[in-house]
Picture 1 (cartoon, each protein chain N blue to C red):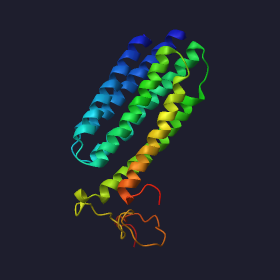
Picture 2 (cartoon, chains in turn brown, cyan):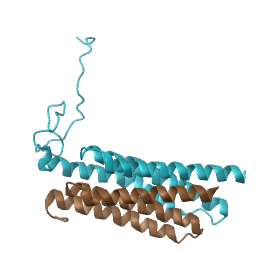
Picture 3 (cartoon, each protein chain N blue to C red):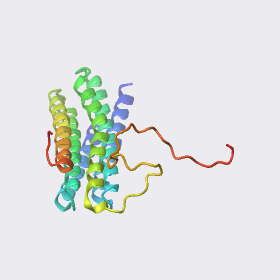
Picture 4 (tube, rainbow over the protein chains, first blue to last red):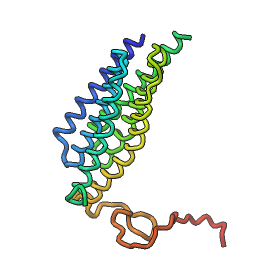
Length: 89
Length: 134
C-alpha cells in the first residue's frame, strides 16, 4: 500500500515542479521567479525524502538537509540584492 | 498494528502530495503577485512537513532507526518559510507596481518597511468604538 501512496506523492510533487517551471519561465517580475525557485527547492526536498523512503537508505536525508539550508540562503540573498542592490552591506 | 501503521503512513504521504500540488498550482494560478505569495509558503510547507513525518514513521517501521536529519529539515523549512515570505513581500512593496495602491495601515504610522522614524514602535492596536467606555 505504501508503494501506491509513494507513487501518488511522487507524481504530485513532480507535477508541482513542472508548474513551478512554468511560473519561473513566465513570471512577470523577478520576485515571482525567486518565489518559483524557492518553491522548486521545497518540492525537490520532498522528492528526495520520498526517494529515501523508496530506497530505504538514510543517506538521502543529508542531501535534503543541504538543499533546505542552501535554498533558504539563496532566496534571502536574492531578496537582499533586490531590496538593497548588494547582498552584504 | 503493523498494518494500521502502514495505512497511516500511506495517508500521510497522500495528504502531503495533495498539499504540495495545491501549493504549486496556486503559485501558477493566482492572479496578483501578493496573492501568489500565499500558496507556496503555506501549502507547500505543510505538504513537505507531512511527507517528512511519514518518512520518519516509515524509518521507524522498517527498523532503520530514528533519523535526526529529517527533524532538522522539518524545523528548518518551518522556520525559514515565513522569513522568505516576509522578504518577498518587502520586495513587492518596494517595487513600482504597488506605488499608490498600498492600503492604509489603520494606525498613525506607515507600514514598517517605509517607516523612517527611529523611536520604538509600540504595539498600537486600532481602537474600536464600542460605546461602553466613557
